[in-house]
Length: 167
Length: 224
Image: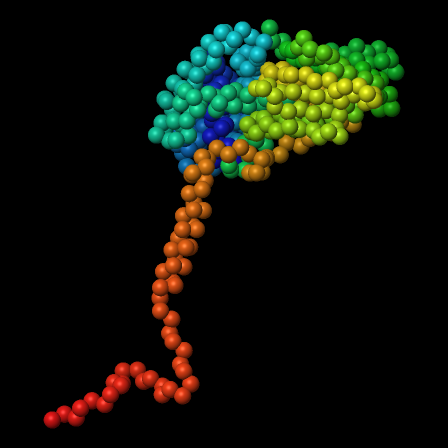
């Protein structure tokens, strides 16, 4: 998987954690439910796989294995289905504008806190994510990607997008 | 407010009209048709018959107009919407579907505009404006239909493939992108300019004595 794909995959999981306060617990539970215990027997192995993201402070060198990458994609799509109602509320134009703005503010705060805690803030890409104006479009793109990755055909779409050519 | 996926079918004995419904929040897709009675009943999906002949379908999105069509419209809708969604996941939305196709979708004022052309002559196309939530609901409905074992229709969804570099939006700023080719062109010009300053050896003129290297041109005075 290209470097950008690794970065996006980890950012999608981070967005799920920002949306769902019990997101990290849900990840471990989902791994058990989906039969991914071979790839991720515990939360440490899941954390190690996510640390392949080069934007992390504690980044690990090397490529993600095919099985591990596939398992992470399945995990993201399952969790996206779980938080689908929350994602939908964020991008729906039928919701009251004031309420939508408050939801985005809450999401931005949680997401930025997680990014500051785990990512290397000296990297340009991370600074872009934390920037109020530049980061807005990036955060929306992450939420839309999650929304469209939910459902029975979401995994194939997400996998193809993570393997896009390098920009 | 959000409903989770729900499917139900209304079907009677073999040969009776069959109806399948796929629902997700604001989108609802109904398929009407006849079961495929040529198949072995033992291979029929659990809990019902397989829809083999589609007579018509109806799609309702939010409070907007209901779309109706036949199999070729449904195939067009599948191809165009799923291709567009695939591009949208990569943050590279582009209009999908050409004038000749029955269905088109394109980005429109922060949302998405779905256009369906009628097969009846002199009927204006129907245009629906969807937000991202409604588009996601529609995608879920189409996904549910494609993955339902009760569907025996010859529908071919587009393959999800990685996008080539030319289809992806540029994220690197223009000065940064121009830096490498500019530096390459400048170094080439500099090398050429320096090379032009190096004197070339003169060609020997015919009839002139060959110059011997290291020999003085005038004889040296004898030593006293």
